[in-house]
Image: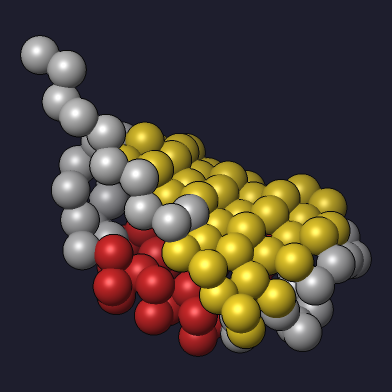
Length: 102
């Protein structure tokens, strides 16, 4: 999970492209979406992945990105893309690892 402050004004198309790009960069397969709803300063965007899902929530200057996956992936390229494309300041990252329950 990533959150931060952005000074950007977004469109639904921009956030949909962002989710498609971060999903591809992370090696995940899109099965539905991305789709964005909202505007002009509050947006929610979602992509359903074969491995789980990703979401972006922008409310005013606050931006939140969630990428959930049941498959391991290198988060560093995704974090760099998030920082660059959403122009985040004061970025906070929280990685949650879930144990395999078998």
